[in-house]
Length: 70
Image (cartoon, rainbow, N blue to C red; front, side, top):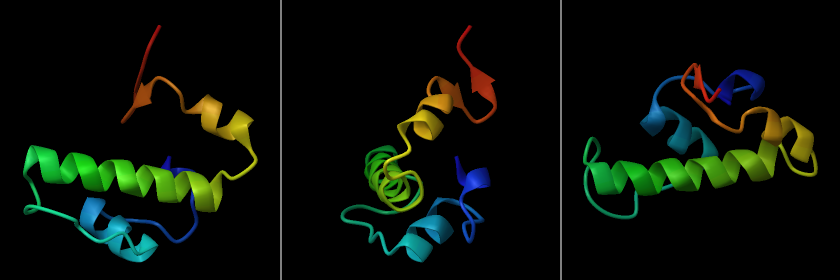
């Protein structure tokens, strides 16, 4: 999803920092903490870059880092 979002690059920490998403609990590279940050980053990206454009969000549905459902 980041490819369509100008100004976002790098890993999870970098993107979270750019979007102003703080780590709420735990340390990086721990499943629970990273999952929460990933979810919060997704919500912020959807709000900022895909707001009122559901068709663009739907295009990404079922795709995980280059893999997509058949």
